[in-house]
Image 1 (cartoon, rainbow, N blue to C red):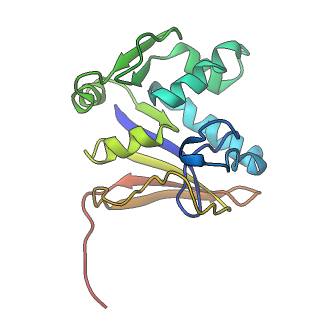
Image 2: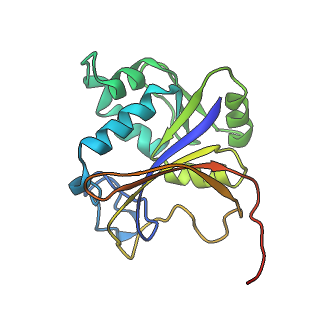
Length: 202
């Protein structure tokens, strides 16, 4: 399976707490919920398309706990996000989580995260999907383990917060595979990993 990663970002690269004020206040972050005003039908249609391709999910602990607190109660059979999340295998990367009660959930990464994720990539299937889980994504990108990035860039800059491409990350080149813009101005770009950057001069 290839690993695909879907992340909401601000113009200045912040991924922290897009979905609500109390989602992640670490570091004194006070801007939680910044993505909510931009939700529209275009945004929802894209998310539905992404989830249709999933064969399994890989989540960080924080995202897992948010999802597990909401999606198991959503039982409408025509909801593509809920049906996929509730039915398919879910892998939670955590060294501290002791149990995971959401059906079809397995905890990985206690001893060797890279080894566990590499083994998952070698499993048959289409996509092992990551949603949110920015801290986990940064760890995996340092080992070239994420194949495709779906970056949804919202027209807002916050000045503070956790950034996806932090200083010291692995230099990586990407190829823009697709791009679209929602009615509220969210730019949805799909990038495929393309090795190391090339350099030149003007």
